[in-house]
Length: 237
Image (cartoon, rainbow, N blue to C red; front, side):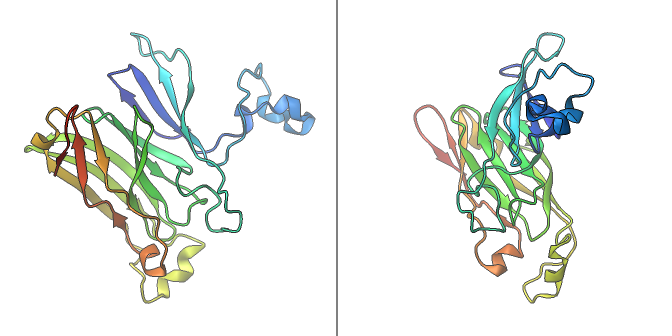
């Protein structure tokens, strides 16, 4: 269980589960070897194993006590089994870590900390449509941390994120390659005028492609345009 954030519109908490396993499975049904994960409990949680992880939503009451829990979006195994560097589907999340809700555009930021994507990603999930958009990809061995949303600082909105520990093992051998961007971390942001969001119901980011070349896999790649979608038209930054 990883990051958590609050959606005041729906009175819902969103939390990241980096992998669905152990006590979340019906281990008693698997036999004595797996029952250790349910020792001391009544085995109420019996969901399917998913190493790629999920985002869950938890409605809360007026005291902010969770009433129930269900999946919002999950990763899934890569249908291309020959792609050994990416065990989870590249069009979906993998090992979600930190999350942040953006109420003004009704979207959820999701940062990955995964061994199942060769290059981790920062995603935006449109809560209404469930559309995932890739905002950023990291260099080899890095994870996305600290995604955060500032709706209005000096009339500008900011999406923040950090890229932590590039070239962590087993990718440390790539530090000596000519395209290497170095082992230092990164802190960066997306920004636009707050006025551009006026009346918007959602935002549509230009999707950052999955890095395919070795040079792209060494760098931080990011979305360069966002459109805000009001009820009758669109407005570009």
